[in-house]
Image 1 (cartoon, rainbow, N blue to C red):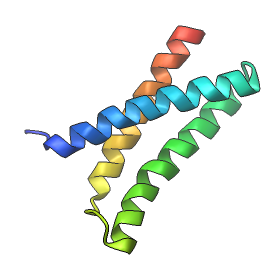
Image 2 (image 1 turned 60 degrees about the vertical axis):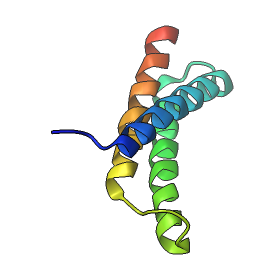
Image 3 (image 1 turned 60 degrees about the horizontal axis):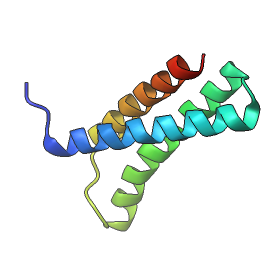
Image 4 (image 1 turned 45 degrees about the horizontal axis):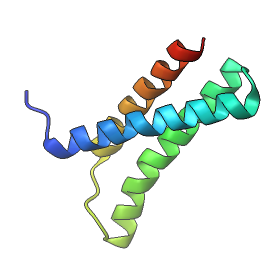
Length: 87
């Protein structure tokens, strides 16, 4: 099974988003792991799906639920990378 090229783009952008959000929330909340993780995951989901929903509603882009899924998977991986580095 070959993964479409644009799914990889969403995946890698998701990794960057997860890294930035988890690191920023670690800085802001000072090591409250559960709170940081819940907020970061919520933001990753909202941003990833929100971008696709925006594309669907405005017609500026192509709506694909699987793009949001790829972004969320990448975001979770990015969050895990930061958690390993920090904790």
